[in-house]
Image (cartoon, rainbow, N blue to C red; front, side, top):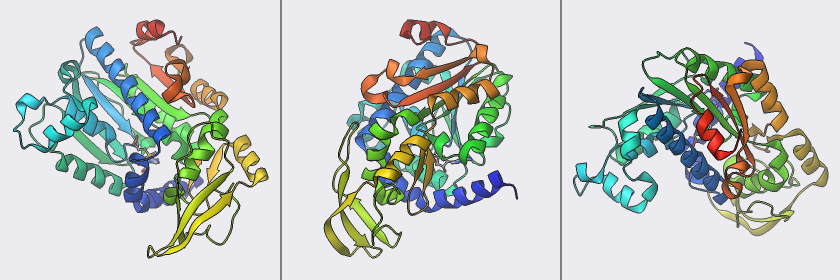
Length: 357
Ligand SMILES: C[S@@+](CC[C@H](N)C(=O)[O-])C[C@H]1O[C@@H](n2cnc3c(N)ncnc32)[C@H](O)[C@@H]1O
């Protein structure tokens, strides 16, 4: 088995095992991560609106590494109006509590399918359960579909529908290292090229690990484990769960973190335990961009230059954009970047208006 295949199998098992915790703690969690996800969704809404108005084809959204179906729920809900639903339908209360899920007639007219692929069957099962619970299973104008499989083996899309392939919230950083990232770029190109579609990869920048990454992973160490840049002590192993007592927000300069420590049976072992950063390992993390924890979680924050190289090596430069997302939204998207491949030259005008060319 080659090294990429080996990493793929190990990571697949890890994601299957952590699916539920990930969903509970990250998807519903850190304020900076939620803000960034909202930025990505708003960005995508604007692009969908623009494309709906500008071109005649209907759209298929392809969510690569779709996890628990964030986009399926969003766009499923947006294509169903409250007027069509019985008062007792679960989607009604969901929409009342979440204005971002309101009916959107423009998107409802043009978006035909949200298709998601993920290698973790548990993630897909979670997504399907969520759709079932909110009543987005049947009687829809839009198809909400999933496939268990590899992000690196996307098939070429037919040209009767405009494919928009998107890989969100630094998923590229957990897609099996540099080799995986390269395969992802190739695969997303293959998916959209002949149909003259669009591919978007949205991820954090290594340059922001110090101001965003360290605090984010420290604050969510009950999900991914204690980061290796925090001094190891008796509780670093996966025998214990350390629950942080606060979320460190962007630009926090705090080198310490207070946690409550629990054993695997949820018994409190120590209250207000103080963890401190190890200066050398912290420096190394910032320099290399690898996020590692004592329970073997791995991610990578790619530098702006590295994503540039991936674009140059795998995509057509004349059809590609590389955006610092802070140019669009400094509060919600300061630490991130987007690589965009636009074969049909669909986005030039809107990017001109946004001043990101
Ligand atoms: C950070 S999560 C993102 C989930 C979702 N896109 C969201 O925005 O909430 C990354 C997802 O990528 C999946 N994944 C990682 N490597 C993959 C691969 N090579 N092929 C398919 N899915 C993969 C994981 O199972 C996980 O669900």
